[in-house]
Length: 264
Ligand SMILES: Nc1ncnc2c1ncn2[C@@H]1O[C@H](COP(=O)(O)OP(=O)(O)OP(=O)(O)O)[C@@H](O)[C@H]1O
Image 1: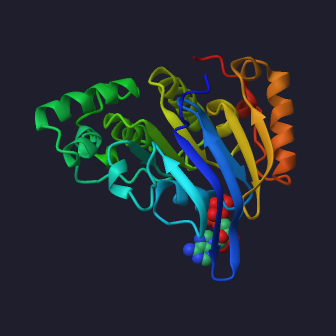
Image 2 (image 1 turned 180 degrees about the vertical axis):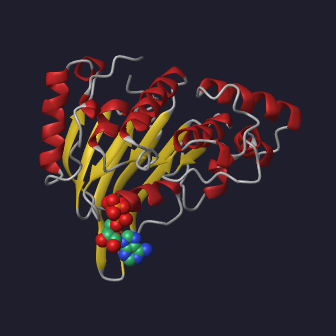
């Protein structure tokens, strides 16, 4: 301990749009294999922080290191090291499930036969065995998001960013996918940073949940341990603390979503 560099290190970043301060002195370290959730009400600055860490925009002040690189200035160095999963699946409708899942590998120059083998293995890992030849319109929303995850994970990224990846799914589908994602991320030691407005996403997936107020100011940090996750009373208390820090947003809208997580 102490000798391992964090995978993501953000130091005192600021970002304004015109005169509007979206991120005001935000710092965060994410350790190898750690899963961190960023929560906050609409406009808190979650997506801006994620865009800064992904290198799609640069900070006005401060520094960001992702796997040792500046994600904005050294964007190309992160190719293949990071993967992103979005709110919508962003699959190509004219390709089958496996043709979508292998896309990232083909872009990285992996030979076709190897890409196919790896994509099929990942489809199986995300519980889509047998669906490999289906086109996007033949898949349910949950299945599409699984193909999207298989595509992201197939390139074997060290770091996975998720931007509201479970938000468009119904509670039962989202819950199953969250639990599967948590197990896969832990099994393969992925370092994850994700943005969500759903408290259940954070409690079921993350090791650490961070609540942001406008300006991306950190108002609450919750450590989420397997013991907490398995205890309904602790889950409810944690949920209540996060909801309060979010000013009442992000409340669960059914009992099922607060069920303890036993998988993994
Ligand atoms: N490109 C931009 N130009 C101007 N203002 C922006 C831009 N991007 C973000 N903002 C502003 O910065 C603030 C933070 O936005 P951001 O999208 O990061 O919040 P968020 O927490 O992700 O919100 P949401 O949950 O609604 O996605 C908002 O007030 C937003 O209007």
